[in-house]
Image 1 (spheres, one colour):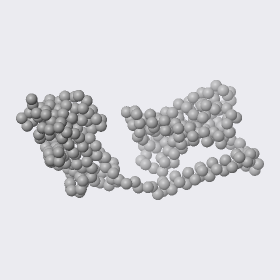
Image 2 (cartoon, helix red, strand yellow):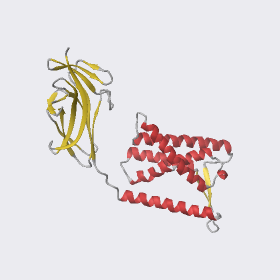
Image 3 (tube, helix red, strand yellow):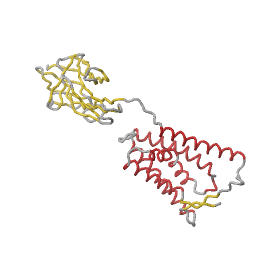
Image 4 (spheres, rainbow, N blue to C red):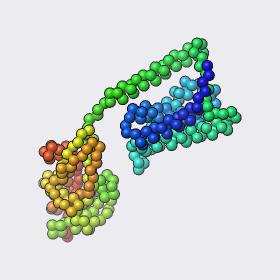
Length: 307
């Protein structure tokens, strides 16, 4: 029995475009998970194999499927490693677009090579089914059965986790960023003149003589799977000090009410009260009206007097 369908490369391209549209326009759905798994574990390798091995007789279908899965794991790992050292990082959209770009590029290469190699129409593929005889040797029969069982097993596991999702433990992101919006370049050295800060030097060498405080960006992101109310206090050498927030000076920030997934981020000023080296600045995150300590951030600063 012969079945003529659209070329596998074009099917993969269409499914990849469909997944991108689902992720952009549709909230988290079962369809995203169903298309996402083969997108990661099969599509990149299949298009690479299609570009490298154009003539089908060089490789049987079982070898092509196995190589596609192996290459996909390697390709996705390399793309993830590259993104980890890029400005975009490993997040949904950069990962999606990077893998999709690889799939489309390899698809184009494969189709161009096929067009140059074959004179007939290669935008469709014929499948030949011979169920009664099953003309395979014993090894290929057993290997085919194992692959079929593995595919159905993976689909069953995927279906189970979609139907009964595992609820991970909630957590809260609590962080500070330096003057360049990175996890670096914090204020390190102060000059105290008649009880006021006249100079602040940051770890990247930046000199500030106007703000009268060491500026950092304080951030909180709620991943607790429920609405949370937060409070923040600051101590220097275990002594409670005020926090400069815009034009407001307060001994406690809060209440900061955040929904699940919501982020709060503000610039605050750190103002030490006396001279001394290696003074320990601690930003304390509380919940329950400021009574339950949830997290702590620490910095070390040096404060000198005017010579």
